[in-house]
Length: 153
Image (tube, rainbow, N blue to C red; front, side, top):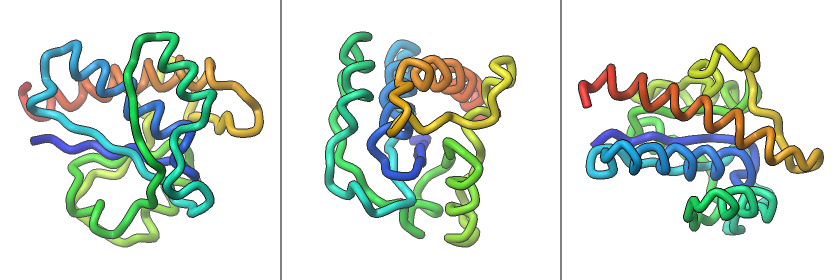
């Protein structure tokens, strides 16, 4: 089983959306028996909360089912997951501070260089959930292609 973890700050906006969209692509490719995903945050503010209503509105409008409660990334995640994808530089640095692990830690937007974006902007205050959807949709498609090449699936 290939395990993928998406990480943002509070685990209610970007990383849940990325997880849901990625798994939507995984299911469409017929790979749900080989790839699983989760999401986590680096900050404690929203622990146990469901995704932001803006995230759920975007997912619902596209017919993407999703249920999740915010959680913190842990040291264990670095050993349990194969890939950890961060939404921005600060998230990447926070994950690095947890120490080394077997997971490949990468920035999600590395998988969509054609967008010209290096980070997924946080829509918590800006309300730019539609923009976030388009970025994570492009990047998670690229990520799935990368995983398929790496694992021959």
